[in-house]
Image (cartoon, rainbow, N blue to C red; front, side, top):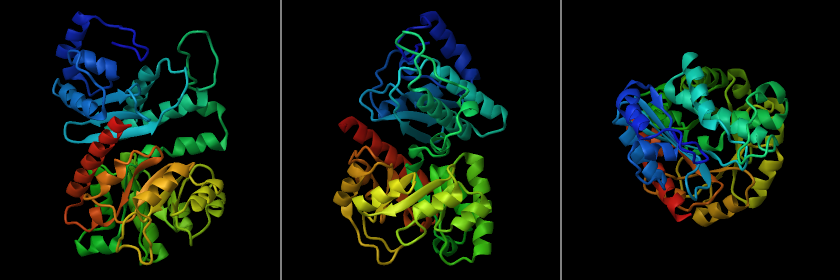
Length: 393
């Protein structure tokens, strides 16, 4: 209807046909901001909150799922897409890639979603995989020079051409996955009479974007079995699963990576053992630790504790100022950790620090009776806070 360059590809009569006949039959519709505006009579879409409203309005026209693409959202530091399935909103963020080679990104995304659906993937998983593929292709193709137009093509066959570690790691990890980072606690789940696997499933259904499996009391055999079961749940929803500390369990279960602390295995050793495709996160409190994590081959850092917490003993807090200091200096994406819950998560995200991609939570999800409801509530709160932050920036 409207290309990313602004060219109008469909007139009023065609738009009317789209709304009245095509949308009610669609399993998913994937308009960019200009297309969403055109379908809704020209409403202005300038913020993430506007995109959420547009997704809900478009869903009312009949499609089962809506993905409003915000690659051209004004003044946004990230590329933000809003996915709405009629019940839940999901904010899918990725790094904004500066390149002229963006011709055909919309068609490619939709085609990739269709291919993933044909393979049997759930809708949200298909959308996440497609978005990651397009982002990776843009990064790989950003310096290609073909033609003299304002837009150039990107390379769809990058998977056949690139053998570099940087490509594989980019494909494996998306910083937007840090948005709502759920860290399990077996003791809390036992307290509420549920298994870790059930708790992980509920958190993902509520909007968790990445899961860290943490169990300090389990033996290696039991921890491995739990990891395999949780991985099956995570993979079915396209959500990465990381293992806390135990590189051996991560390897044996084929989890997506590990998260290590300052007293655990160094990131350099973990990278050597896990290889280039796995995700590695490192807990940091200082600029120096963040620098070492980057040198060691980590993909992200967990910074904190921001607030005091009962889930980890002898863990001095660094506060919001400490978090901001590390985020501003870090060369890696950051997830805030330590004492974060629905009373303060908004404050953390509203700081608007570019490298801060999300919050990690434990008791706010798992020391509650209803993990699904708590995750939904926190996800909505984070989306609202991120929207407010985008307006400020």
